[in-house]
Image (cartoon, rainbow, N blue to C red):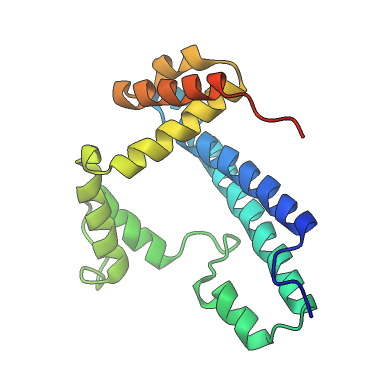
Amino acid sequence: MEDPKMPEPLRRAVHQLVSEAVANLQEVLRYTEPDQAHTWKRMTLYRATEASDTMNTVAMLIAAYCQRTDMSQDTLTSYLQTSQQHSRAAGPTNEDRTHLAGLLGEPAPEGTARSVPFLHGQLEAKAAQHPEDAPERLFTEACLHGLKARLCDDVDSLDSYLPPQTAALARQVADVLEATQPATA
């Protein structure tokens, strides 16, 4: 009978890859800050696609293991949610442009005023006007920035590019990380 737990080498690889993806996601957030105006387009796209590719690698490693353990193709396809897949190679779709129009408060492209992407964009724009209503977002950003600052030993840089509330919380995260040293294996 097969052990139902994830094999340890696969588990370690997944943890490493997820850590890499999170580091790239922190960089996405970093490059949205005003002091990065000259590079934000290039760097947010680089880091977002790197994070996406890394997480795709995670999914494919797990999928390969599932295939190896005789999971049916239908089940695997269902778990991989292939119907939601969106290729970057084709570039932005009409749905993406419609979503952006809603997000930016622009008129909907013809025939899309009541479409799900446009309405989602409008809802996201409205929510972004009140970021204090999203403590989980603030906490996530602060954790990512605090972790990166601690890893780079550059905690003082947090004050130079983050909003004050995020910087204060990121400093707290960095301080906790300084006090707790990782265990050596």
